[in-house]
Amino acid sequence: NAGVTQTPKFRVLKTGQSMTLLCAQDMNHEYMYWYRQDPGMGLRLIHYSVGEGTTAKGEVPDGYNVSRLKKQNFLLGLESAAPSQTSVYFCASSYEQGQAPYEQYFGPGTRLTVT
Amino acid sequence: AQKVTQAQTEISVVEKEDVTLDCVYETRDTTYYLFWYKQPPSGELVFLIRRNSFDEQNEISGRYSWNFQKSTSSFNFTITASQVVDSAVYFCALSENNNAGNMLTFGGGTRLMVKP
Image (cartoon, rainbow over all chains, first blue to last red; front, side, top):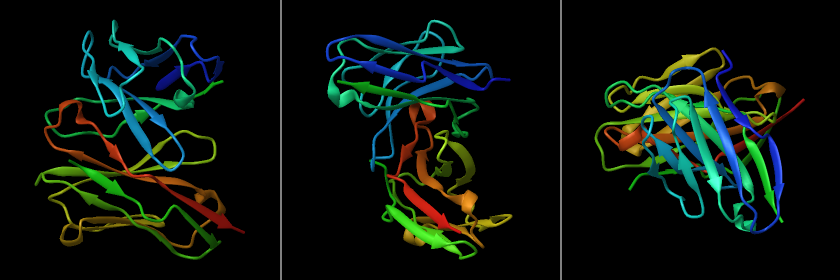
């Protein structure tokens, strides 16, 4: 099992450019998440999905869009990149079993720089 | 609203010392879950422990131990006889029960440096 994978690992964008980050998991998890990590701020949730075809906003959704067309994939899009979106992006997935949260499994991260 | 505070941003110890990482949380729910994750220099996040609010027993796993105290809203993490491989950023996180998507709220993290 590959677990959670993210593509690409690194990317440099110019202000105003767009890109899509791909997250894939092979654990048949229902729930998937996108976080950003900035120094001293821990991880902050951007968007999440509780199943195929569903998405919802997290704590810091502005400037991002997501899609979950297939259960195993969760895409994060930046339509017009800004320097404030320079960050490390992590995807995660978890089981869904009743109402109790289980641990989230994280991908290796994508380091994005917007100049 | 839920909140997690890790007041120690950086800790430096010498190998074999014991070290405790503090985690204080805020929640209005009576049922919630607490987590610790480790982020080594390679960057990936590694799950360490999950604890629900009804289980206040301390937990020990090898050199790692966790002290959960509801009275002070704390879930502290102790590494005994630290090793250089313990150098990492450690995150405490909280999830309230019944929250849509089982979302986690993370603390800011504590960077632990273990010197040989």
